[in-house]
Picture (cartoon, rainbow, N blue to C red):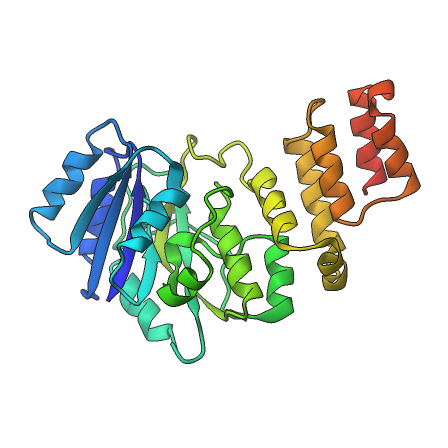
Length: 305
């Protein structure tokens, strides 16, 4: 059995289509656990109308605590040996589970992901999709090389995943302090615990782009991602991995998207953790209040190039 975890918060507009895309799967041995994260619209009523027709669908309610708590709640009730994740505004193509299982050698791999379409269309065609495709290649991720690639960018669209429940439980599931990068944090921890991921380039999901999403203003989710990197890697580990180029990209994204006069000291913590500490940079941080924020930002940007 595959346990599908679906967090839901005020998604009356989309959740019906998402659930329907699960019901229409050509592989039928699944349970869908919908975790209502404190919705105040008709989300609950819509889910319950599906439950009346299909007993594979379950409904859980929790006070609003965001998606990491909802996913963990769903995992704690999951009966399947494999987990899948589908947000309540995204959709699957009809053969998503069947194709994923056919590609998932459980003796070799711990997690399988597929490619995905993405669109901001209101009406989505899951039978004949003609949308932009994410950049997921046919690949195997393991060891230090995988960690390097993941420090560059999160390479796992969560709506495409099949993963062994046992390894997720062993990793203590999602860290609820890492929202909205809790999935990235979990993938990093799994890889550090010697998990092996397989990706296939065949798109089997459709990610709905929304302006109201938690990463709409910064598609890289820079601030939470940098926190995840700092949380999971010591300065020495980062130095040994030789990922300076990727870390500089994250630092410059932080300058562009996150830096302000009130969080200079927080920014300094990341710069030093990433081993970008020299006399000139130390002097800039010591004098940032004297030289003024605008000049500091210009000079620190140049110093970190």
